[in-house]
Image (cartoon, rainbow, N blue to C red; front, side):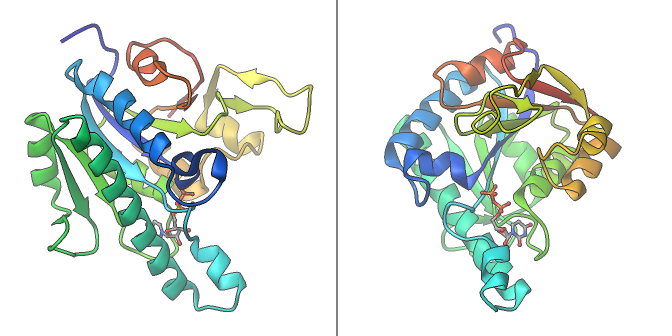
Amino acid sequence: MSQVKYKRVILKVSGEALAGSQGTGINPEVISHLAAEIKSVHDMGVEIGIVCGGGNMWRGETGAKMGMERAQADYMGMLATIMNGLALQDGLENLGVPTRVQTSIEMRQIAEPYIRRKAMRHLEKGRVVIFGGGTGNPYFSTDTTAALRAAEIGADVILMAKNGVDGVYSADPKVDPDATKFSELTQLDLISKNLKVMDRTASSLSMDNDIPLVVFNVNKPGNIKKVIQGENIGTVIKG
Ligand code: UDP
């Protein structure tokens, strides 16, 4: 294996990252780009689990604001994450990367049910495992899913792939020209500085299980590889 800092990783791809500049839906160019980036680290022997978000299509909170029952709206969000997962699987398979999709909500015709031991076996065999459906429970997020799956499979790190933003800033860099980027933070810093990187459930799960996070811009070619090789191109958040 080439020089790698992290051997087993969870890559969290938000729905927003899959939508690219169009903001919603799935952008095929983004899928191809992401697949090539993932392939580059897969070729280095890194074991990769992917957790897809669904915010490019549907968020439970939005539905609830429209008057829907929250749990019902959340299940729709979970289905959105599975659509994203299938799109990413397609992109990876086009490049010859072996993948399996596992869903937390059973839909055996299109994906395996989530079975932790089976997922670990796939990773050991060099298959990229895409975790769809979030945790399978309403009121949770796919950030929490990333923290949960990372803890379950013993991942070394959670890679938070961001759409155009290259780390965690003191303020929104698109709005505040004085915003500065942090190269390193702790989970407690996120709380004390009120920085919104992931929700509190996800943060505390990562902290309790001592799983570091790397927030980085996935749009720039070569970035996933740099992160895997230990180059700090974004923000590292220690547990
Ligand atoms: N969701 C859920 N339980 C989970 C994960 C996700 O109910 O364990 C639902 C929730 O409605 C959420 C939607 O799926 O709004 C999409 O996930 P998320 O908002 O985390 O996606 P992202 O922001 O990463 O695109």
